[in-house]
Image (cartoon, rainbow, N blue to C red; front, top):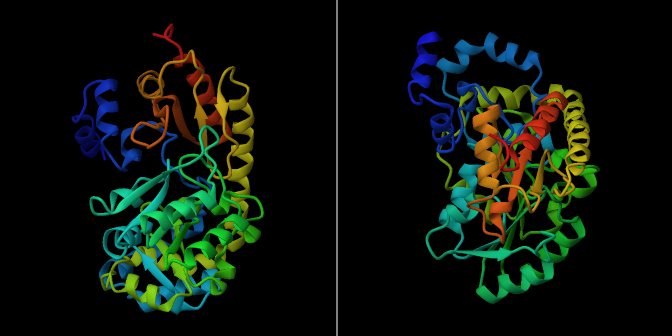
Length: 375
């Protein structure tokens, strides 16, 4: 362990060098000893029993081939109560996004700001960005449908709750959008990765209505809600069997490892623990939201997910400057909005909610670094 730690520390000599190194990484944060308010996951799941089970079965999980796609779909089927033929299981949602954007879509349209991977995975010239209403960041689905039709999109994406804004798109709006796009042979991809942190999620999700809408596919990263970023599990659900088959054809035979498979196998046993964990995440987030709202001059968008989007006070430093100062002085990492397609991107930050104690520490640290007087 000490040898490994020294190897990590050799990559940087100062806190500023550490910051520059971390900003170029896409994970492995736990190796570098800082508080991660950047990545978005459930801190209260899985329970210890899950780790104990994986540990007890480690020899079989390491030594044997995992199951293939049809059997994996059966495991997800047991979790979400949907026919297996409607399900494709990915090595994280990112694998499925790469197939959707990179291979299947001729022209994909995405509201922005949003999760960049949908546009990044598309070949050059195949992605169209549709700006959300500013400064509310609401999605006008009628305007979005009009633009999708105008540019000849065959795939449209809506992330709800959206990342980074943490705001939900109403179910009725999504249904209306799907019906408008259906007339133009356009598939609607609804990314529900953060929906477990919303209120009344059963009434908001389109999963149980999927058979009514053949041009809808629901995508879900399980990493966020289930706290399993390292296991890499995501799935797509659609009643459109031809579309499902097209995505399935892009998946290789052993795309999910044995640990992820075993997690899916035992997950139904922990349904209540999962629901309880989401309630705790929501409770912490709501307290955090109210405290952020108390910061003078800060615009705080009411969150539907486990992270909060903020516009810094006009007199404060920029998002990138605040983010860097927060890390260098307090060893806390958040995300600024540089790299997102939106007006005033340098004024916005996204903060993942953690425990109430960690959230309180972040607020005090944020107040310390937001203005030029801080050294």
